[in-house]
Length: 107
Image (cartoon, rainbow, N blue to C red; front, side, top):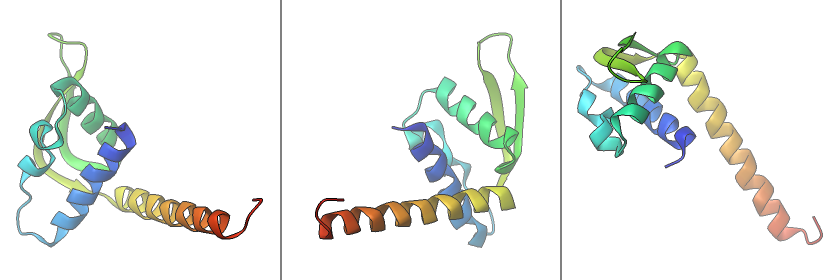
């Protein structure tokens, strides 16, 4: 799966969880997303470092070559919500451009 699709999926799950009393971290686990631990940890660490999510502890492990993470109380931030909004608008624009291309020959 494309890394950006994974990121979008994680943020979308976290955005939907804003209505819940308690977030089920299993919904964004490496198993639920069908990822290796290394890729999952790296993606979660990137989301934290970019300010898209909070409530996650990230540390460098000397046992492996990737950061380790622990989800305590993960939540999407305003920056994460903005990422979802921007990507949603870009998707709509791409779909509209594709539709125009199909309608107007020679474009």
